[in-house]
Length: 123
Image 1: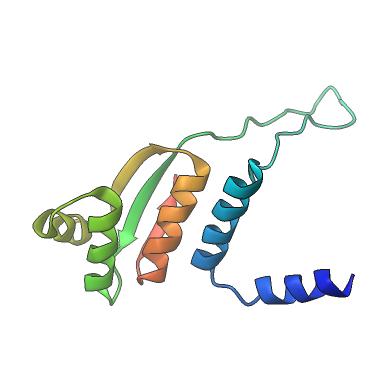
Image 2 (image 1 turned 135 degrees about the horizontal axis):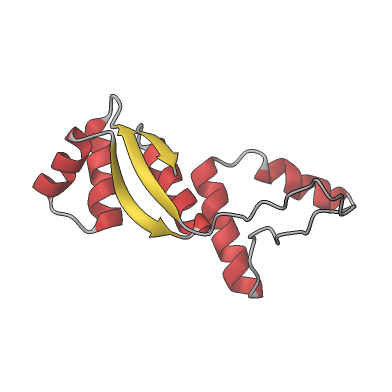
């Protein structure tokens, strides 16, 4: 138990980007997925609706923030753009920068952009 507490303590010190990398490595190592399974609503009341979990997401850049150069670097890397194209995307905010991504990839891109100083929203 003490070992688990030490691990939890160390994990709590990680940044969002480091946590994202950790989850990917655990998924690869053990062949599992960290995606939450969709559960049916318990109790089955007649008036209850079961919401379907969204499976694809669009990543929208709301603002490049004060560190636009860092955001442009992330955009270049993540989207495979040249410098001028990435700058154009950053200047055009708010703008959807990538569509139809799965939850994990969308969260990862969002974390990278936010770490660079951008404001990002998943839709």
